[in-house]
Image 1: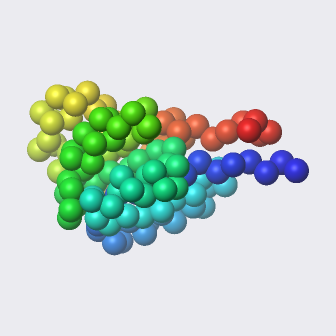
Image 2: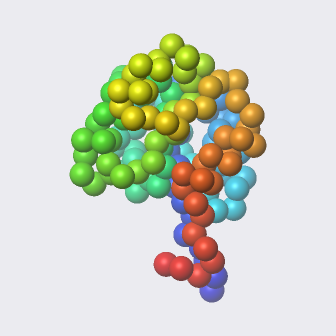
Length: 132
C-alpha cells in the first residue's frame, strides 16, 4: 500500500475567484489537498482542525487580517513552525510589516500559478514515497 499522506494547505483568501483558482491548482497536485477559509478569524481554528502543513494568506480579509493571523500563528507553540506564504495585491504597500515580522515568503498578485505552486513545493515539500 503506497498511500502517501497528502500535505494539507489552508488558504486564507476572501476573493472567491482567487481562492478557487488556488484551491483547484493545489488540489490538482497529487501530494497536496487544500481548504479555503474566507474569514481571517476562522483561519486559526481551521489550521488546527485539519493539521495544516502550510498556510497561504491574503492580507486583506474580514475578521482578522493576514498579519493578525500570522502573529497568532507565530505566538502559538503548536503551530508556530508552520510555513506561511502571503499572496497579496498590496504586497508593495506592506514591506515594512513584512520586514518587521521577518516574512520573506510573499507572492504579489497577479501571480504566475506555476511560480506559486513551486513556492508551495519549496515551503512544504511532498513526502518522499513510503515515509510515514
